[in-house]
Image 1 (cartoon, helix red, strand yellow):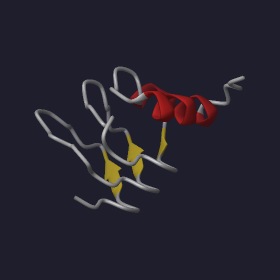
Image 2 (cartoon, rainbow, N blue to C red):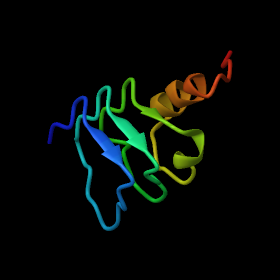
Image 3 (cartoon, rainbow, N blue to C red):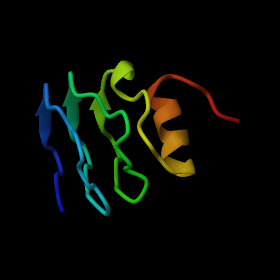
Image 4 (spheres, rainbow, N blue to C red):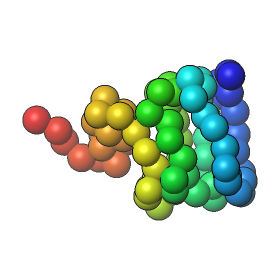
Length: 75
C-alpha cells in the first residue's frame, strides 16, 4: 500500500497490518505508533513528535534513521 505524503492527524491505530507499506514523507501528528510494526515498510522522511514513536517496532536501519530524526548522533 502506498501512503506517500499522507497526513495522519489524531488517528487511533489499532489492529492494523502495515506490511510493505510506503509512508515516505508522511506526517503522524497526535498519532501514537505504539505496537505498530513498520519493520518491512518504508518510513523514510516521516515527520512526527518524538512521543509518538514510543513502542513502534522498527528494523535496525530504521532505528538509525529515527535516532537521527531525534538529533542523536550514531557512530
